[in-house]
Image 1: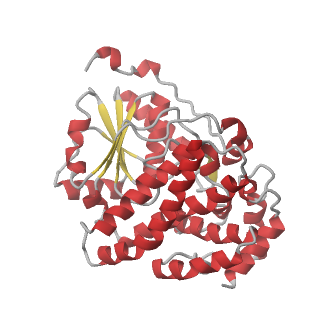
Image 2: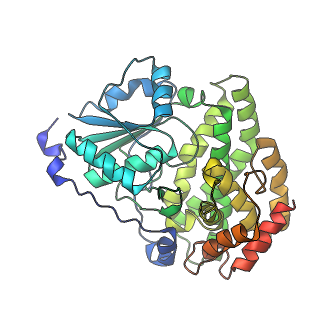
Length: 385
């Protein structure tokens, strides 16, 4: 490798600005004409590509792997390897800035000139933070189809109690995203359910924001079309894909379509649409739910899917929310606190609603005048479905 292309350890800057969703949406109009990195440099989606990672890191002298326990086992079991091909750092599952800083220090000590992320959404978000802190290239190998985290140029950060903190947007994306449907398909089918829940929100969160705008660019229009394609694909492909997975048909075309929709196509929505197309009501409800003890036991995408229904009610679209119930029931997405194993108390409802209705909350991008009382009423309505 050309030494001039290496990132020296001395150049590391262990600092990251955690900008909140609130801040991003507050400056949405200013950012609408500025496009941050919308996609990985290369998106390689083919069965078996996880077994070829070495050829994508040939230009690096000291690549370092960041992975978790379950992700590492899944990767090694699939590839048939006894050990990894590069030094391994274990993330702690928190998706916290603290853990990212710790991993960056460890990678710095190994003189890392590239980070290889092997894992799911939180792992990808952590690795993106680490790569930015160190100013090195990033290669991502997702082991689950749980969100578009591997595709997107931003991270979702939590504190050590798994309470939402912020969404730093990174100045560059991964140099390669290796999507191996044969490996991902071997994960438990229930893991796909969270991915479906997170991904269907792309349409429901972005469409009311676009509908209120009078200055849509061609990129905004492309994002809006992508979001509609994502929704329609999930509604038609999710059930047959899950049926195939439950039958062990890992190479089924419905499964491959579902994986690329959750990881890749969903990522283009925010990639092309920017702030307007990233999060509004549903994710803000999710973020509020993270304030409730025990909510970490419910998958991210399940909480987001619940948030879609709450957002639709606040928009005055109860019929549309009810139309989603057959799909939710078939797939196994929650539409109540009971299904999420959370106490449905006045105090908990107020905690979520106060967070979601904060004046700087991106919920207002979808429902400009939303109040905490409206959100509480919406949650009560959804609970009675």
